Amino acid sequence: MTARVFIDGAAGTTGLEIRDRLAGRADIDLITIPEERRKDAGARAEALNAADAVILCLPDDAAREAVALIDNPRVRVVDASTAHRTAADWTYGFAELEPGQRKALSASTRISNPGCYPTGFLALVRPLVREGLLPADMPLSVNAVSGYSGGGKSMIAMFEDPSSPDATDTAFRAYALGLGHKHVPEMQKRAGLAHPPIFLPSVTRTYRGMLVEVPLHLHLLPGRPGGNQLREALLAAYEGSAVVHVHRDSPSVLTVEAAAGTDRLDLHVYADEKAGQARLIALLDNLGKGAAGAAVQNLNIALGLPETEGLRL
Image 1 (cartoon, rainbow, N blue to C red):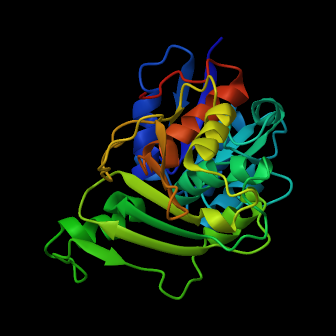
Image 2 (cartoon, one colour):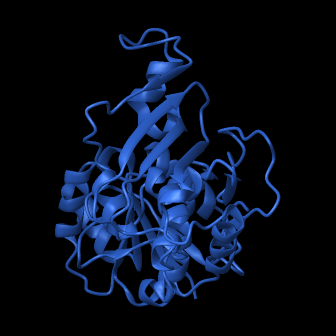
């Protein structure tokens, strides 16, 4: 059977990426609204309620408004905004994160797509917390750099449009220096941490790609685990995954673009046993597993379709 899918916000960066992944699929029938009616509430409500599944690629407030327009109880919603990522009545859309998460997603009508930075952070940290290798009350920091497409149209203009008043030639810029980034509550809750991590996000002059790093002092951890023990815990957590790959042999240099153009998530563990230090690093595409790829994966699970159909692995 063919599932009817509506992408609300299909003209945005993430929406276009999702549409590309769904294009040509015989098991998906995309519902579209004529351009002149795209912001018409009546037309949107009709499309939202006629779909088997809806993917929201909207700002937070608009996403909440879209959900309020849905009165058909059979409609499944995948929300790519930040609006519902810590909500108790929404299922967190990271299929690989917890045992039984796929089953929960397949039974849910409300799925919140994870943030791009939290995806890398949680993939590294959550299995270690769950296994007791990383105490839940351990103070953590996370350093991350993303391609500028992660900031949407406004940030893309800052790097690409010379006529933009905010255009910059800067190759690298740190931001959220006030430490109040909207991803932090999501990171803390979904990792099961007692304290919010210190989050140091940045953006660099490349369109897509992301590198997320969590440094650890191994001598502060229970039993002083080595790099191999941490790696083995991650390997066990993601065994058999077609999307998440834990590398036994990691290169000496990693680039932010290493997973760009894919929906893959690559995990690396580097350790200096003598110094008692480790660097856990996740590589992903901020528009792939960090956004559109995850949304399509969640859509597939929710509709009972092959999980990796349409993904770029």
